[in-house]
Length: 159
Image 1 (cartoon, rainbow, N blue to C red):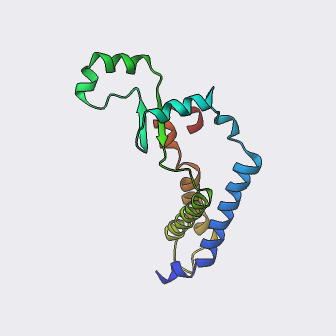
Image 2: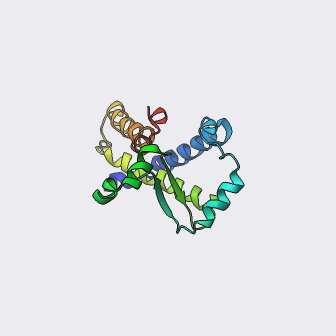
Image 3: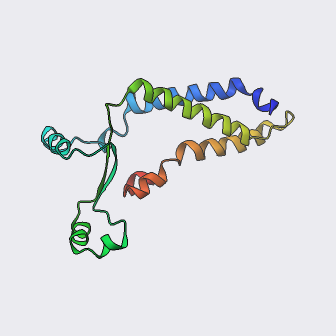
């Protein structure tokens, strides 16, 4: 464990580098801007959704979760005809500061686990350490979103 504590500087540096690299990617370059669009007549849709008085949570449109629902003709018709989507309702407006803090914390914890995966032998060859930790970092940062996108029917974004 003491070997892991000796890596505090690279762990912190990698979390900071990933945080700012993602910032540049998302905010300055903006490769995903075209993936998000406001709904037509956004104000009216927000008003109608608010009238439903749904508590904060995640909802699936056209969903049959139980055997009884799968056998119900009304539910069957809704599932067959669509639209199909997921909706997440937050209880309050999102806090960008809190989101940024949690994102950095995620990158830091990920860096700790990646460092833990590496050969902790102080005499290990750089190429072996880089091979193991590099593969773990690519898996952690580049492929973590795939199950969500696959399950959300966003296959184009998953591959």
